[in-house]
Image 1 (cartoon, helix red, strand yellow):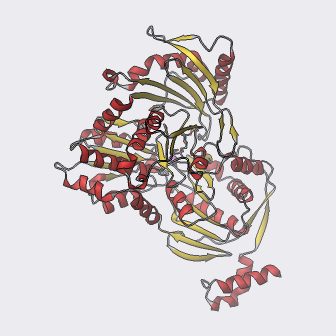
Image 2 (cartoon, rainbow, N blue to C red):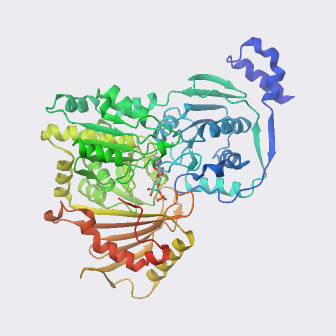
Image 3 (tube, helix red, strand yellow):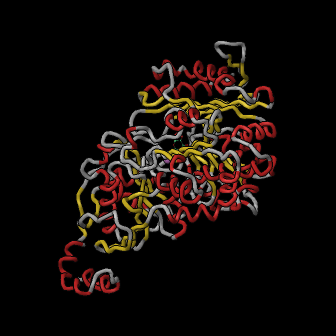
Length: 591
Ligand code: VG1
Ligand code: CO
């Protein structure tokens, strides 16, 4: 009876229900009844580097999605009762269905208000921005990021906390624990909500505000960047610089159009693949040289000066102009170097810099020259959040095409692209005619060049991949490994091992420790080799091999990275016996 009374008051206080409907109160109450459903745990609901990612068919199993969503609500740091959350995702296949399920379970778990992207669409950075600007208690993201979408491909669910960032390991561990022995979940039998109309709706006991996915985010970018400076460069230079943005059929299509067409005044030919598709047009929405081939081909054919792409959920970016590719490791270092003069948000100074462990040390050199703190964290954006919240980190990046700043708590593809447009506009003020290659060369001349490459061996058998990692661990521990010389197979080049270990990280803010974050070897000349197993795949294992070499020799700066890194790659392959363990003689992707 108490429940009925409070619901009556609730409805009275929420005028979305016309008074005339109060007479059908009984029906509403039945509709809003909380049902407890018996369930059984599914194994493997452990969030990885960035949320839970599995095949759609797995999420479609009876109770599978419900179990995980219930675990999220049960694990919310201060409980779910009375809370407000943001909900949206990259629009991939199964998103609308998952959104309806989440609304029903949210209703049963006492969530008071859901801010929902129209058609369940919101880019990952836009979710982070909304959580922060509306001060909500967190958000749920429906995305498997750069993984392909469609009925036979991947789906994903990720929980972000009130700071706008991916839940820290302490929370994801709690979610996982709950999924391991979940016996029931709570749900309210609500009809499907029409996700296509913006506005405020009463959906059973919760208020749902359906928002335009783009406007809040674009407003934020306009506060960060000097759009007039970019426009001035784009429209008053002769000949006009050419630009191409490719959303890879992912969520950033509408955001890209808003920036390139509405704000910067460019024409339709400057954007492509900008309608979000549930299957990303059947391709892999990952902005790298392999998967963004349409962009690369058009940029080269039309000699476009500035090309850029982002991934399925909009947190990654690739910067690619005719004959000019910016590695993500260089990208974040260059953004950090130019930030104060090219981006108004940083005018009053930068607090600190950071990178993930496998990312090259290019940003460390910038930090040193500016006298800033620089942090090396494990792979995954969640590790940057505490440093930002503590006011010690402004700009950071990962080698995996992730770049961002403390304007939100996710990496941000469109932000990075506009940051690069700002740098080019500022560089052209200093020296008219500057292109991407000029900015790169200027940076290397000042700081030296970090050659970097990553080899991905996707979907190898988990057993072989684990065995290779164990073999490496044993090798590292063997006496005499540190100090030994490792020789390349096709040349006389050799490298002396200075240090070899499994990367472990102690968060400087909360003291939490994350172990086994990647096997690295540092050589006496500063070069590095790193091996990691991916935490974002949906089946099998993906081995990632990262190599890095630093050079101050100007005559090498124009060299193809693959040429200079060859000896290190040979060392890595022979030491790890990768071919033997994974039965692969070639990587799927080289970046
Ligand atoms: C990969 C990248 C990592 C990135 C993560 C999420 O993880 O290496 O740097 O943070 O994807 O990116 P892993 O564990 O597969 O190496 V995204 O765009 O999928 O949210
Ligand atoms: Co992504």
